Image (cartoon, rainbow, N blue to C red; front, side, top):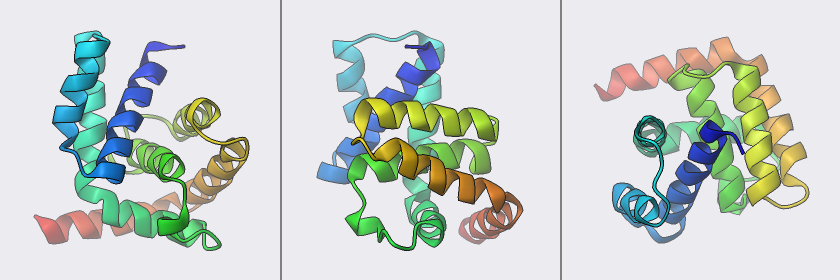
Amino acid sequence: MKARTKARGVALQVLYEYDMAGHAPFTSLENRLEDDPIDSNLVQFITDIVSGVVPLITLLDELIAVHAPEWPMDQLAIVDRNILRIALWEFAVSKCTPIKVAINEAIELSKTYGSDSTPRFVNGVLGSLANQLNEIEQKINLYLSNIQ
């Protein structure tokens, strides 16, 4: 497994724990790193993902819900929605990852952590989101300007 893919997996686990149990994300991250130390550059990448996604969960979920209308966010598997949140944050908010790379990485995560149908679902939703990137970026910028 590539190093950044592994880092995304750790971020996914932290976000899953936050979503499922409400545990403090950075406490969860510290606990994971005690069990499996990771290169400091990758720790920063994980921290960026977690600290970027958590405050924007409501917005990310609203954007995802538009592109997965048959699956209300509260009915999506926790793993699936966090994979979608990470990828959307990477290519639409932080813009630290090219769209195709973010989608491919999300599919890899879904193969490892999701159900058999998760990769196809994740690919479809993220493809739809990517096709509406300009509109999504406008909504993100408006949201961010309102919370600052």
